[in-house]
Length: 607
Image (cartoon, rainbow, N blue to C red; front, side, top):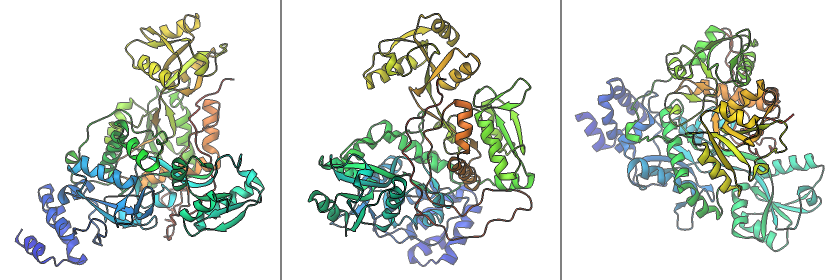
């Protein structure tokens, strides 16, 4: 204690002595963790913007929550060049949507929006600074790219950025109409996306440079150029402020999320739960309106609210190493809920089948070059978290919904299917959409929230959706078949399973609600988590996922989250003799092929 006090007074610490001190505190048990406040006091600085973080890496067993609690301040990496998300104004102050969101995190976790330090990062440096625990999280329009995912974890996507095109309202009907017209650009990377769009549409445009967005917008308004190509976040804000301007097209769509340290699932859950609360109570919409002068796009937070506070998070973490275990076994062990047809179930011979079962077999095929290198064990869904935690299974599937409570006990892959409340009609019904059910009667199970949901959806979409109550789903379906009701609303996975066996029922593609389903994984294991996600991203890109999806649901998927960029990590083969891929300098801002914006999921199609 005396030594630490003297060190604090002298502020004479270097990287070679700070790390052993932290390690000593860690090894002495949780009782020593409060002493981290001395270290936090040493490395802290009163300047909230130009803070120079310590280069010493905190031990991997100390949680991010412990660092924040002992410091009593949130340390946020932030870009200074990403308006209207984060930038420095003429008074030298940081401002923007992400700056306000970060302050809101500090207020909810530490009692005041001023309990925060901002550290300047770039899109390339942020993953490194997060990885080294120099910052607790990073924001400022950071894209969830494949390269960045190798070095940092991410919260859920809260908005989309990318490359887009701004025009004078009504001047052009579509991008091909811009052939041989002039397009101004500010940043060189924008030209890559523009060039891909030219090739795809078999046209050419005349490019001219502009020194800034302000100059380019002025030239557009004055008629000196016909369009401005640039970052979607900038152009949509300009269009919202001036009705004379319109975003004509989005060349590429990039998910924006909060960047987080690896192997700290509790910290990720706190961020996601808090952000979900910001969405639910309207704070996010209010702040977005402030900076973009328009309401935000629909954001899907984690469902099923829980109360989670910073003070309740543990001070230590215990990272898992699933990759080493499955590399040694040369196969994976998967627990599945067999009552989740058509996602996961047993066929007449007792073999596991279903959409998620096929996904797992494809993972095994890519990892081990053997689709059968999987041991499937049917089990109740409630047993999966515990078996993941004690390494009895490596993955879990079977309509497992990523809720706030579930995120406290297991991690999840990128979303593989969106379920929710669906609507079933008779195959012979002329109604093939929710709008076609306007004024009709829909059967729901008494005591379920679906009656209130019908009323809410009807009000939002200006539809009159009448409801009739039944004691259970079987009775409601009997009423549908007898013509007493025009449709039945219930869990979509349940309805899809019934429709697969009862050929007289059809499930509408649209849903009344959305619940994210994903592959469950052990917590605090970012390497394995990333390995699963990158393999899924490869399956998205090469069409394999779409083929499996169409096999089980009759239509192609429409809500995939595509991560841009490239990765240095291989996902080809895990085996005892496998050689790790060579270390390479990560590329965080690679320009991907343009992807269409994902509309609402369409889980099935009427034959």
